[in-house]
Image (cartoon, rainbow, N blue to C red; front, side, top):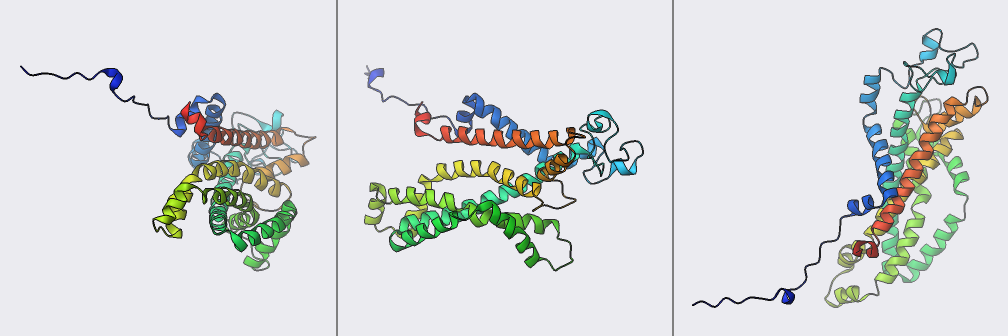
Length: 325
């Protein structure tokens, strides 16, 4: 008769459930889930802006108030109440030119996100290259980099952005020639990238200086691993969470910075829709018609706030203690 051996359940090793993924941990936080939903909505509106505008039957560049009678007064203000809001123009008309506000807002999302994501990608790449390299090399390289970074951070960033943007545009475009749209976007990305990488590089430099003395890095060295292997296989995986949090927080900062520059008259020019320029235009006619300034101001505030809250949720979700919980 065969003997069947029974293993006690208590003797079996306990099976620990795998920690939830990043998205599930973000969604467990109510604030993070709402912020993620708002950000996803803005991204969807940006991607679907041409389709929505086609279904809506308007575009962001046509001067409806000037081309159609009875929409604007002699002073250029919408005749209909609440900034010209009606069934035909859902968010009203732009004072003066008479463009549709709804499509201006839709395409303004695309402008802000394109600049913000491109700038965040460039600054993250530069920050990683400089911060990881300097932190790993140390020595005189570390001291020189620290000094140069402090010198660059001492400059007033906003004033430099205002000064550099026209200079770069004048160097890239012949006098009297209209700047193409891609040139305007490129100039802003270059201006933002000139200083935006420094905080990330300094943060990564400090983290890598600590990691390079850990046992796993020393073991890799003892086994004959080269510098490239140590940086790519040992150091970079340990700073991925830091990079993700930085990129998430950098996007709303660049959106706000781009809006400030456009508000001050530097950056994206007509006829490209832009939230900052819409707010600037609304401030000029605020007393006569405050409605026009309301929509871009609320859209900008809501987007920046949602992305900042999402960045906080990502940071909490990447906390190892949160993963264990």
